[in-house]
Image 1 (cartoon, one colour):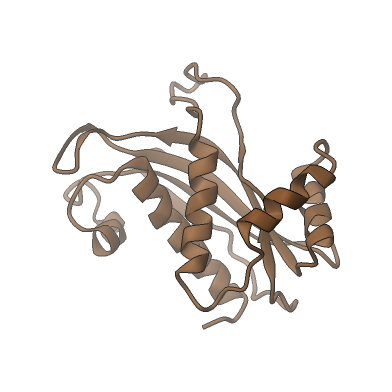
Image 2 (tube, helix red, strand yellow):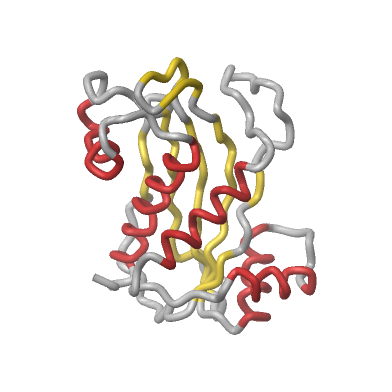
Length: 195
């Protein structure tokens, strides 16, 4: 989906009460920086930390969300088993923190823009998936995926939302990730009935 499509799995509204969420630090999906078999650049070091920080930034910018502070999460994380399936580890973290749900995810592409905001030779490209797990039931309540490479508006009018939110310029990977997280968390908020 290099041309860029944000995927939001079509799902019904979430019928569980999720009042307090925790954010598990986003993990790298690919350990290597060598090109993948499909020719896409693999994740460069640090992309997962940027995406995690941007999640907190988006959550903090809205009064809709109640979330466990990042410092509390980081202090609790060493007490959780570091191996095993990601949803199980996220649920364990939520139990330790007393949250209703845990937002977790992976980053598989974090490619920085080459050039300036008004003249880029390579556009920013970001791919990450976020999910919400219920702490009480262990059920995966929601999943969203952002998989986009910024394109000029003239190339793809379906990407008008990028320019509506960020202006007519080339984004850094961090700015692009922020826009993607806003989009995914808007969808999650709608599913939780937080409008």
